[in-house]
Every structure is written in structure tokens, then in C-alpha cells.
Length: 426
Image 1 (cartoon, rainbow, N blue to C red):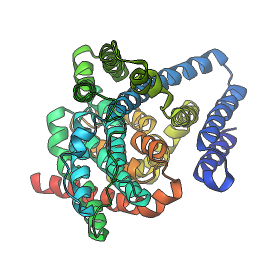
Image 2: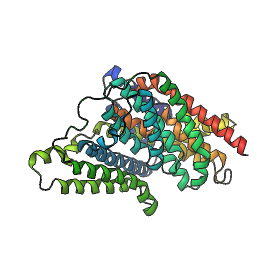
Image 3: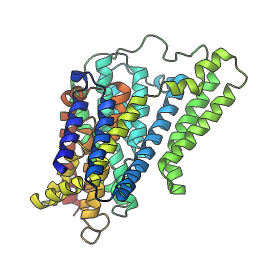
Image 4: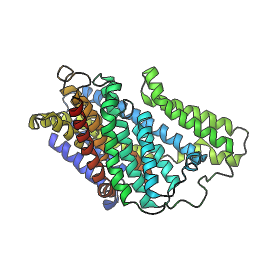
């Protein structure tokens, strides 16, 4: 049955990859894969009560990610509806394609460390949509943003779910994480950036029309208020988590509720025409629900693999056959480009005790780097990539052809930098 479960997952994964060839939306394939995987788990389960408990555990974790994603997407869409991103786009005066790539990628890198890679990708993808109207060029920018977001999230305890897991679990401390991974993470971005910027020549084709479609309708003060409330709300999420120790999705819902109230107050005495254009109800209609369902399906499928111990078995196999711990962690990072990095890191935490590798050991630091940046190699290897895939309509094979090799080179360059850094310092 384990073999059948793996085959179902591979078949579903293949259907997602070949979305445009078979003319079936990837969200439908992901949902079917998730349901079929759990159906197989249930059919062979000797204890359905335990199986339902595991399903509910996974559903709880998945729901937190989905609510977080929906909250962030709604805030970003509301800011865009009010024309708030014009505040940033007006400051970017460059018309050079390569210079803009550097600006956006470095902003993403540092913003991802302050927020997290998922939220940052959503914000920056929306921003790129306001700056660039050429489809192919826009996709290239978004592809590099995915790399930048994952690289930026790897060296911050709140930048990626896996680094947060290791931070909360006591495997890594904030100071040593930043000191040990900042340079490797930066290199993992700079190498792809250098290759991409070198190939980008000419002037950036900017949109000629107004970037704010609601310029006549949206009052200037409303634009600035919504923009700053939205940005401060997103920035407050990691602060909320640090103070309350509650899951990040609650902080995101707090930010969403706040900007919702502010929007209602701004539109209270306005005419119906303006309310219809700027109402959050209209914004909610624009949220990409298929992407949310895609997340649900693929995470359910991965949860089924974890429940049956397949991911743990894969990690054990790596340990037994690859004796070098550096190679093991590197392989885990590569594997995280195919399946979610969260269960892989969770399995590694169970396999390797703190007695074997104490806090801030090189093993944990490299695991944080590899799990965080390895997801950039394939578009569906990270939450940031899946979000960009849904929002910017990136095709799997396009990303594989244009971006994957850049992410792979950056990934190994970062590992080399990490090992060289350790060799010099110790």
C-alpha cells in the first residue's frame, strides 16, 4: 500500500506539472491527490481514531497557513485597489531592466527576513505587476523574487517556517543563525542575480497608463492611510507572534481586521459608486481561491506521506546511505524542492537529538539554510513559489527552464560559502 500511495502522489504531482498539457487546473489535481492519498491511508489503517487524529493535526497546521495566506492576499489586494503601491512605484525612477532587478531582489531579501518569505512574495509580486507590463519580463522578475524571498527567510528566525521550527525547538539561536547564515544566504541570491542581470539589457517597458486605476475615485488621504495601515499590519505579524507566542495567522487576521475597519470608516460617508469600487467585499472577490485550494490539496497529500512514515523513511535512508552529514543535509534541501520542507525538517529533528548535535551546531545551521533555500529550485518547492505561481500564473516548465538552474547554482554556492566560512572561523 505504501508503494501505491507513493504512485498516487507521483501521478498527482505529474498532473500538476503537466497542467497546461492535459488542460486540467493544478488545483483540481492537487485536491484529488490529497483526497486519494488520505483515502489510501484510511483503507490500510488499523486504528481509524488515530488516523482521524493525525488528519485533524495536519488540517490544523494547513488551516493556519491558508488563513495566513488569505489574510495577506486580502491586505495586499486592498492596498492595490486604493492605489497604495503607487507610493513605492513612484519612488523607483530607474528604467534599466537590470538595475530594477537588483533593487527589487535586495528589497525582497531583507523584507523577507523582517516579515516572512510568503508575505514578502505576495507583496513584491503585486508590486512587480504595477511596475512591469511585459509578461515574460514580469515572470523573470517574479522568479528572482521567489529566490530572494527564500534566501532572505533562511537567515532569520521568523523568515521561514522551518527556521522558526528550529528556533522554537532550541536547535538554533537568533544571533548565531544570523551570523552563520547571512553571508551564505546572500550568496545564494547574488549568484543568480549576477547571471540574470548580465543577460538583461535595455530599458524597462513601463506601463503608460496610470498605475492607480481608482485615481479619480480614491481620495489621496485614503490611499496613504490604507497603504501604511497595510504595511504596518504586515510588519506587526512577527511582533505579535513574539509577544503573544500565538500562531502567526492570528496576527495576520488582526492586521486584516484592522485595515477592514479603517476602510469601512473611510468609506462611511462616501457615495455608493465609490463604496462599490473600494469596498473590501469587492476586494475579496479578487482573491485567488484556486491557489488556496492548491495549497490545501498539496499539503494534505504531503501530510498523508508523513503520516505513513514515508518522509521519515526517506530521511533514514539518506542517513544510512550518505554517511557524510553535510551531504545528508544537502540532499534534504534538494528533496524539499519536491515535497514540503516542514515535514522534512520535522523528521530531521526527530532523527537527530540535541545530545548528538547541541544548539547552534553546524548541522542545524546548514539544515536551516538548505531547507529554506532548496525550495527555490522548483516553483512548487516552497510556499513563496506556490503563491507566486498562483498570483503571477507561472508555469512549472517555464520556471524549470528559466529559473531552476539559477536557484540550483545559488543553492550550492551558498553551501560552499557556509563551509568555507566555518573553515576560516574555526
